[in-house]
Length: 137
Image (tube, rainbow, N blue to C red; front, side, top):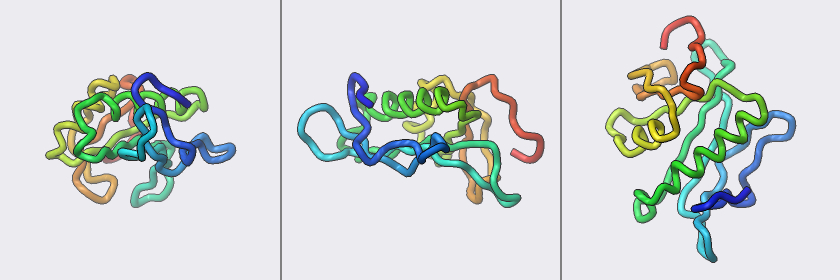
């Protein structure tokens, strides 16, 4: 899969039949090593597996601020949509303003703070009009 600013490395790919896969390398154009990872993983909470999936991104600080995380996460969200996976959540540390900005640029809806996933996180939802599962956030 190739995007304008970055390509997802060969280790990225949905798990067979599931449309979800392990974190994959984020590789900018040109001959250089990966600069981060992008992921799409099923979520489970204290009650067990949910119908929700997490999208995530991690970039080396030297490569932040170039749109790579936004573009890679958008590509992963497109893969999720093609596979019929949704809704998709992104959880960020409450102090990670840059990742919250990525989620906002992706069109994700800010649902505020949650402790549902075992730690305090800011939760974002895609598509933004997807309904939350009944129960605690």
